[in-house]
Structures are given as structure tokens and as C-alpha cells.
Image (cartoon, rainbow, N blue to C red; front, side, top):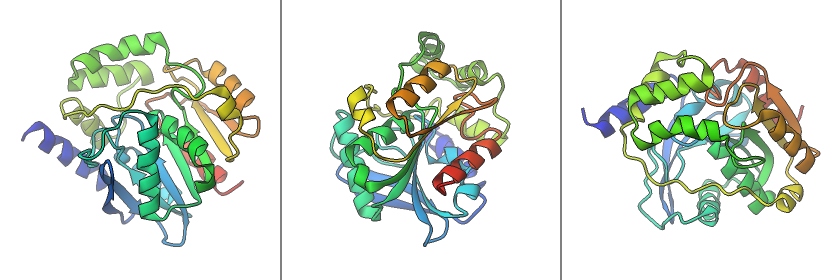
Amino acid sequence: MGDETIFHAAYDAVLRQWPLEVRGVDVPTPYGSTRVQVCGPENGAPLLLLPGGGATSMAWFANVGDLAAACRVYAVDLMGDIGRSVHDGAPLRGVGDLMAWLDALCDALDLDGTHLCGHSYGAWIALNYALHAPHRIGRLALLDPTGCFAGMSPRYLAHALPMLLGPTAERVRAFHRWETGRDPDDPVWRAFLDSTATVRHSKVVAMRRPRERDVRACTVPALVLLAEHSRVHDVPRVAATARRLLPGADVVTLPGASHHSLPTERPAGLNRVLTGFLAGA
């Protein structure tokens, strides 16, 4: 099988592990077709999920069972990243284009008042969207967000460089082991991560940290959930900055978690905090 075929087979294998009925829809936008995995009760509170870079909507397989108990879940393959979204329209030149893409996606899905949750790069997009269109967002959950409250650790970037310059399955695994201390527990997810090494990548938008005055003005109820052992940034510094800029936010550090173990590994703690926050508890 070719690289794309192997990747899509691994993607589908993860999707078969979702613990409830899920429907994939392709939503047209000016930037291309966006693949969205939809599940949960039709009358549930809408929840839009944005994954980390290179993870696709499949990253939520261990969370959707709990999240979809009360929410109508819309899990997105990011435009400009790997997955089943097709970036064959307008170019993504910066954060403004990502905001316009999400505007078009929310319009098409009729998602005014949606909760918004993102991990890593997806959390950066989510925070920027909450600043761009706060009237469209009910609650905002940022899972170990990158580029929001601090820059990435130089040590993290140095360890990522070999994988980025010459990706192979072993380099993907080695980087994951360095950051998390172990290989992924789930063999199907492990095979999916392997498959991402050689699939064709699109250019994702470079992250620029939002201006502090803009973050301070955020009116959307927010959760900032940090991974205790994250190596992507200085966790205490991020927590302190998040509390300073978003004094009304819930800032929680999840014991035992690392950046790349979220949201798939040992998900019970994350799911408990996230479902409680989304329910207003």
C-alpha cells in the first residue's frame, strides 16, 4: 500500500474504535472541504473539538464516549493539516484565514453558541477564535495549549527537529517516548501515529502568541487544563500567566499527564474535568 493508503487505513481503524455511532461529513468552505466527525444526541449542547497538529479528529477516540453523553460532538480535521480535510481552496496565510475558515465552518454547521475545545495547536486556534468571535462560543477549554501563554521550550523543539526534518515511524515513536516516557498504550493509536510519519503534510499556520490585552478582554468562560509533566513548555509559568490574563478561568494541572499523552492516554481524569466544566459544574 502507498503512504496515503496506509494512513487512511490507520485513520479508519481508529474511527472503528469510537464507542458510539459516528457520521463523517464533508463541509464546504472557501478554503476547501472540512471533514467533521459528528456524534452524540442531536439535542445535546454543541461541542467543537480541534485536535493538536498532526493528530486529526481521531485524537478524541478515548474522550467522545463521555463527551457525547450530553453534547453533540463535532470533531474536526484541521484545515491545512493531515487528515481528510482537503485544502484545495483559498490559501491559509495567517491566523485571519483560520478564523475565516472557522466562521464558514460554524455557519455551515449552524454552531452559534457552541462550546469549543482544543489541544496544543488546536487550543491556540480555539483561543484565537474565542477572541475573534466570542458571541459564537459558550465555553472554551484549552488542553495544554501551545503558543497561548508562553513559547515552546527550546529543548522540546530540539528533540522534535529530527522528526520534522526526516519523519519516520521510529522517530515519531522516539519523540513520543521522550515526551511521555512510554509508547502509546493503544496499539491502534500507535499504528496511526506511525502512519503519520510518511503521509504528505500541508503547511500549517505559524503560531503567534495573542496580545496580552486581547486575552485579558476575553469574556468566554474558560478552562485551561495543563499536563503536569508536559515538556512543551514551563507548566508553572503557563499556569501563572493563564491566571493573570484570565483571572476568571479554571486553571487545572492534570497529575501524571504529559503533552502528547493528552487526550488519548489514561483519559478518565481529563474526561471528568472536561465534562464537569462543560456542564457548568
